[in-house]
Length: 279
Image (tube, rainbow, N blue to C red; front, side, top):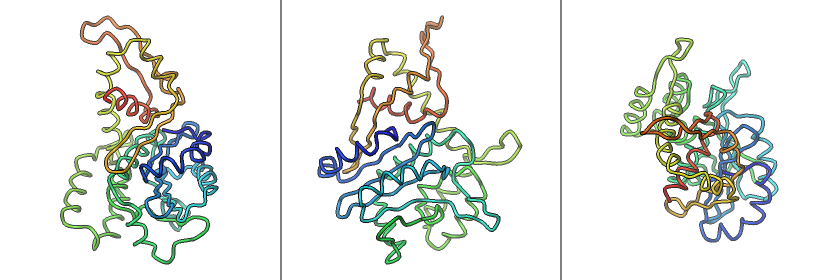
């Protein structure tokens, strides 16, 4: 995870050295209370993909930083605007951006996304500025957490001749498993909520084992580079928001001497610390 105000200096310092070793990076950018994902590759050409599940206006501030580094290809994912002017995004609520950003980083670390994008845009790719790619055009693994069920109907219609039977079956099963009624009795995909709950449960045992000294040490660390699969690397930079926004307090319980409290906007940090503690 990287704070927005550190993005420019981080890329200036690490672009050549890190890319020479890893060739590929996934960055989870924290801009204020918002999270989004940047994927960068230097395997052959200098290419970049910016994804924001909510298409928040802060995405363009991140784009402004990225364009300073003269990428050969700079792609920006976006929802399509309908005839009423509404942009259809993956994220429909106000507090799931961190989970979308995390899952995008995970999925991108497993996939040669630039091969997909080059086939998609061909010679229409902008040599300057950026090229917009719509969510409906991206691989299924990058959109399967979309909260609106209407999105899935449209996605399947657009991609009915592209998806394999295996992908189609797995996709429909995933949506069916994660469909619930919200507070307004409207069906929606709650996959990000369930992943959040699962991440909390996974991190509890690790946090409960930490002493306050260990917590202070982790919170005080500046930057972590955590190798992922293949030649890809997750990059995280600490902004201390995690421990400033969470309480670890004593609780009278033999089984759970400490209780861990957090808001859903800190999902990225939850996963970061879980990974640190497991390494």
